[in-house]
View 1: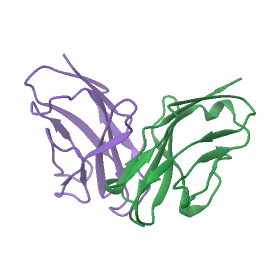
View 2 (view 1 turned 30 degrees about the vertical axis):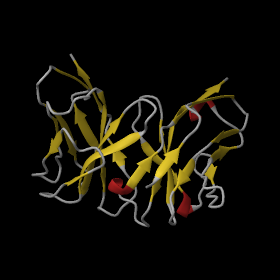
View 3 (view 1 turned 180 degrees about the horizontal axis):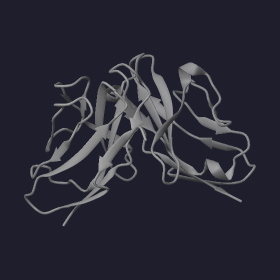
View 4 (view 1 turned 120 degrees about the horizontal axis):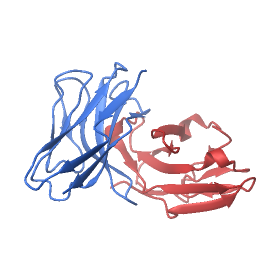
Length: 112
Length: 113
């Protein structure tokens, strides 16, 4: 069975400091991984996906199959990064909503 | 304003009562989904529909029912058989059943009186 673990419920950092959100997964096959974000008073939305290998809003995430991790990183956090972040895993290449397993979420608070 | 509309924002259920949560989308998406969100547990899939007139059970379908009579609408009924209905419910859609980008509604908070 697939499982996604986000060990930190709350992450508090100062503006300009690096931030790293941890995501660990368990899955025996080759997973597809995603980060979703929910800003205050906004809807949950896709932030990035590992197959795109892209940087969005300064965030990057690298899939480490050896450590079964997909940590989200940003070198210099901004106040507008304060939000709830969810890591999600899919067992299929085409990851429809019915195939996504979400982690419990990490709330990020960036202090001025 | 395109997107997914969930209503109501807040809903209260009495013991033994069925309640229906509305979800409408004008994105012309084929697939729609219902998730339940409990604190610290992430999102869990209740039901999904890959195309109109079709729907499938998700991971926690017991005590819930859905219909997909129109492409743009996917209402969720929380029945009296659902013993722990208090939660935040999120509706989502995707362009196709194999598309990984989900578009979410703003959610409905259901509480038991």
